Amino acid sequence: MTDRGASIPNSSNIARAELDNGITLLVYENPAVQSVNLMGSLHAGSIYEAPEKSGLASLTAGALMTGTAARDFDAIHGALEDVGADLGFRGHIHKAGLSGKALAEDLRLLLDVAAEALRQPVFPAEHAERLRGERLTWLQYSSFDTRYRAAKAMREALYPAAHPYHYGTYGDEDSIARISVDDLQAFHEKHYGPQSMILVIVGAVEAADAIELATNAFGDWRNPAQPAVRQATAPEACSDGRRPTVFLPGKTQSDISMGVIGPARKAEDYLAAQLANSVLGEFGMMGRIGKSVREEKGLAYYAFSRLGGGHGPDPWTVSAGVNPENVELAIASVLEELERLTTEAVSDEDLADNQSYFTGRMPLRLESNEGIASHIHSMESFNLGLNYLAKYDELITSITKDDMLRAAQRYLRPEEMVVAVAGPDRENSEAAD
Figure (cartoon, rainbow, N blue to C red):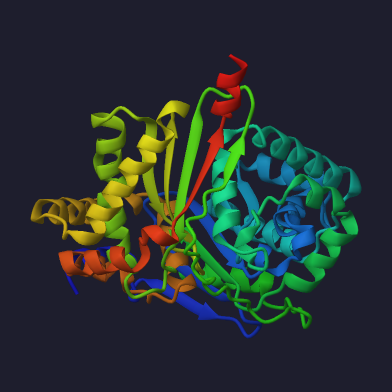
């Protein structure tokens, strides 16, 4: 192992323990910062909810801190605020996530409050209704946002209605209106449990002490009703050139969201695809797309690409905000860059620049407890191995131009790309003029 590998989180300095109830604990000692970060996840995401109750998982996660069997809302937040600690929960597609921060001396409190929220929430009606009202307000506001509506239309066209990725984790106005406190309680009782839960602790603590505290807080948790882990398979690719359009009166900008099914994080070619995406629409001023569509042709206010890479078939997307008159030109320019990336190997300079970018930014992401905890959580969650970070430079520098070309060709197929546009109806606007 290299010196750098020995100085970053790896199997020799990450303490790992498996509790008999299915929880995996990982602790990394970092005495340089007198604080501690908590990060974790459990399988209670939107993939477990019914389509007609879309948004239930994220609402449940958001309501965990509104009251428990031991503390009401004020007591929960007062206990954390008194010591300057933070704790929160959020629902994702596959999992519910938790994150928290406190002084190292307050780790016991942080774990105790987290355990109470996860194990014994009571979902007070007044707070649940407030959260639902906030969610409905956000959804109503977002319904007039061209960027949100374009991304939503792309997602719904890319994934069929039977697929869990068809629905946003926040739900919609109709589904949120159907969700009751009883639904929150029922979802929690069935899906919140210790099986396959991951809990990461990073900071100025002794690993043995942190494991003991976490075991005391979570070790006796059981939920026999917790279902098996659900997976999401890639849907059958569309090949009919789907082009959903959303008209929003009164808007002066159009937003474009283009997407195909991308690789899951565990895919063998994920890193090659990630490097290809960097060339396409991330590195520097948003890669080739930013340079061509925004800088050289002046067709977009912003333009970039993103690669998902979660537990399932996340999309590989290109997004742009444009003058409505430039929509077709911007789409054509993006397609030109996609064709270039899938027919020509990148240059030696592009390869070297992006490899340096990836290897150079990794140490920066490990400068905080939060960054370290996030990467340790990912290594465990995606089964990458605890030596993944130590091998990261080698993994990145071993990727070839041909690897990137094959990954781009495998996923970035123009005939399978959904192109969604949200903005003003130019034809009707011009007719009215």
